[in-house]
Length: 543
Image (cartoon, rainbow, N blue to C red; front, side, top):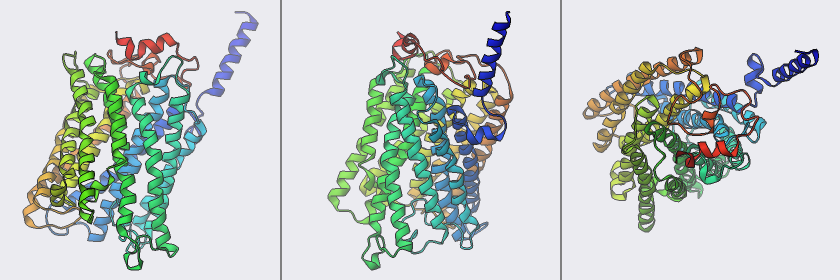
């Protein structure tokens, strides 16, 4: 090699070193790389899952038998409140955002997010918000105990000072979510590879595009509600103070205008994950792909107009109750389309049952149970019986745990070989799956019966007749909680090494992410994928 050629190679290597990851902690503090930011979101979600999980286990330990064993009522209510807020805002949402940060640019053929620096800011808002949220436990009057819904006047007149910290934390998390949503929307709309039409995008990216718009609708509404709480507490307004002419029901209207779309913010990307996995392990294209996209759009629209089905018992006019009952039940139609299409995709497919597929199947089956119990709650006369009982707790957890969380776990198993370059331990993953899926049903299924028998939620003590249900639920909760330690160990093991994954470890997987090496280079798609590659990896490439 000539001296000139040597100097060119040296120059290339020198330039490359300047564009690789930084060394040490600064890499994670200053990074604008979408994969690094995605990893940080996933780690935060895992930490929050452990913190929220410990709260849940203390709650379940207290409820193992009647009487007060471990906690006082105020602390018990604080635990239920903070468990809900932690799991929703710091575990599930960041978990799904982490998947989006990792996979959306890879799936659309972009080299990074549209606003890389904003991406870094959006993440680093969350750790301080988490500390603000949890700081209430260390304040003299403890953390708020009015429930994750923060109904007034429990969160205004009768709340401890720590509610101000919670409100501030919610504001920060809301700003983070809005910035993240804008970034994802712009990345999808502005940075798609040449030749990739909107209708050809992978379903995971599609669901995140719609979720982004839903976040822009929902999060400002929550910000309005908690700001009104704050002004009631400190500026002398009386929005929710009935004695001064305010209306506490107004808070519920505003909160649930955010709260119901929020459920779909947590479940639409989960639909996207499952829609990637089922075709890959059935070795068939997704059945009814276009109808799947329209179903997501329909669910999104309906989710924004059915908020009052959470409020049937507050004294709404009968006409309003009937309207919200029927519009809520309509959501079952597009949801049913999705479940039918997943099943039709598997029909006569060459199915295999590695861990991602098992978790996706568990999602389909158990989320359907959550959907059916949702239909029961949408029925006005029945809701009067179920309202504020453990039936609602069972429904919510079948949607969020066996829905959103199971899909996140499925997505991690599906993309972990791509992220790390190593295959995970399949035997250990099977243990993790079966322990989790059995114990999660042992935990939450008996709650349906406890609720139907009349056991109210958010109480630390209960009559003797509910003891058997609670004992079974508590045993299931502890097995489920400790089973997740297997998941953490398995991830660490895979990061540290193992069998090489290859570029496309799942032979039925389609998409631009599988055209890259495993793990992908630090700067992905410095050369944009060709239109031919986009075509071959898109929905038309199956034929």
